[in-house]
Amino acid sequence: MMSRLRKLLENWVARVFFVLLFAVFVFWGIANVFTMAGSSSTVAHVNGKPVDISVLQAEYQKELTQAEQSSPGQPDLPSREKIAQAAMTTVLRQQVLAQEERALGIAAPDVAVRKTVYGFQVFQTNGVFDKTKFVEVLQANNLSQDEFLALVKTQLMSDQLVQAVIAGVAAPAELNNQIFAFVSEQRIAAAVNISASAQTPPPLPADAVLQRYWRNHPAEFTAPATRTVKIVILSPQTLAPRQPVSDAEIAALYQQTSAQTSVPASRSVQVISAGDAASANQLAALWKAGADWKKMQAVAAKAGDSAIELDNARHDQIPSPALADAVFAAAPNTVTGPIQGPLGYFLFNVTHAIAGGAPPLDQVSAKLKQQIQLQKAQAAVDQDVNNVQDALAGQTPLDHLPGNLGLVAVEGTLDASGNTPDGTPAPIPGGADLRAAIIKAIFAGHQGDPAQLINGPDGGYFAFTIDQITPPAVQPYDLVRQKVAVAWIQDALQREAEVKAAQLLHAVNSGQSLDAAASAAGYSVSILPAVTRNALPSGMSNQLAQIIFSLQPGQATMLQTTDGFTVAALSDINRPTPQDDPADAGQVAQAMTKSMQDDTAASFIAGLQARYKVTVNTKLFAQVYQ
Image 1 (cartoon, one colour):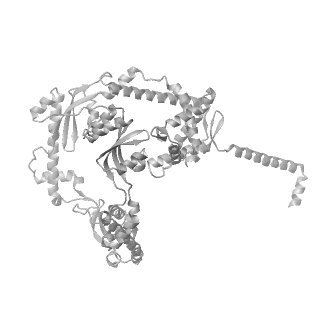
Image 2 (cartoon, helix red, strand yellow):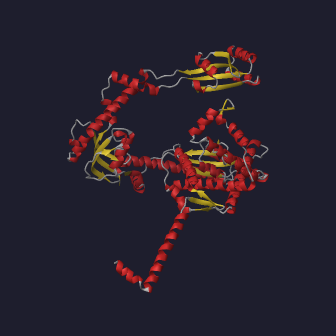
Image 3 (tube, one colour):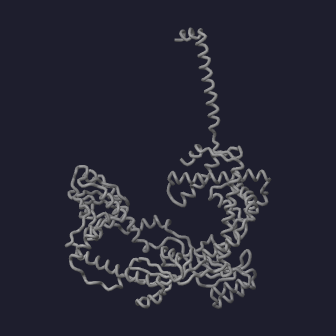
């Protein structure tokens, strides 16, 4: 073979061919190297500078963790994509802001960072920065000190830039006034309720009329599909009550679990902190003389002292060790003090005390017995399940299974709601979850399927056979005649209420007031609570509230209710001005300004992204959330 290649190379045509072939391989190799070099970990470019995918992954992981905490469970692919898009938005915003900050020379001095960190209340104890608490909070959030300080510094720099852009943004007064008028407008309506049950029942009609009603309303008289089944259940819940438990077993479990059920001692306490002994003694004398807590709060505030309440506080949750020792040594409902603390004097009253430790045995004995019975029952189930499976594998009929396997057997007819033909719940043993699983499996099965042992919830098992399937069918008239009569009367009452409500509606919309029209018909009128566009009164349906805002004064509407009809007419429209409610008007102005500032900031950042030519590697981005 090699000799033939050498001979071919002596031919100039072959030589040219091999030179070209060599060039192709060389060029392909070089091109492949450049391709590999280009397929880096750069997920985006900002102003030509790469953004490494690790930055996006860190932000994505943080937002993914937050999403999982708020909604337990792994998010699906569309949700993960949205989370990744939000993370990318955050990363790009940080990158373009950093570019602009460098261009403008914006910086955050260490002294500003330190002042900001010291000002966070979460890091303070009694209003003073606590280094120990600072470290604990960062550790709880998986942050190092350097990472946190970098985040604070970045935020300070971003605030300088963004706040300068939005500082002059404010919603115009006219816009605020119009929004305030829209959301604060109150509408007051009056209503008349005409219930079907209040109408006089008509006499029963001829049998032919009832039969016609039966034929015209088949859904009301259709029996649901049913299945006649045999069921066997092997469940800890059904076996547990039969398990014997001795007092010694209960005592042993109590000893094992007492440490887990122990609760720390706690106190609810009212505390007054006074700056000097004279003030503390005066307050103590007043309190011990019988002044209530409300009066003591007022007197302390007037004297410039503080009064606080601590609910169910543990010893380590009371700020002053000296106060904590005194509180836990004091008798309840007794004013104690003054006692000296590091910054003044305390006097207090313990209003409630919870002793620490485990609850007494007699309080938990019944619960421990049930726990032991359930454990024994689960062990019995685990022991019997293989024997039941073997019996079913041998095609043993359910009603011939051995009686020593802990099985509970039932048979009968039920519908998909778990009810028997007479409408009562089918007597299926076990918990609610196991019952639901059995019914669901039965209506997913087929007649003639062999019985199989199915693993159900709560550690239970069940098997069933379907003997008969009855499809839904309209019940014979003779069988449901009484039911048809009741339905016909109810329908007649409903139609009577509708006619009267329509007559009242017509009278009001023809020019009469609701009061006059209702009085003439013998109805009482009730005034509905005032409704605004952002506050739905209790008991008023959202549909009625929406219709009220579409009415003119004096105009009426009619709505069907669960027991008849309501005729409502708009009585009055109250349009308050900003001067009438300056607090709400101020909130509207603040909200509108905040909204416009947010829009301005978003537009500013979008402009920065366009200026700095932000590009994203969509294929690499997709790998983040796949």
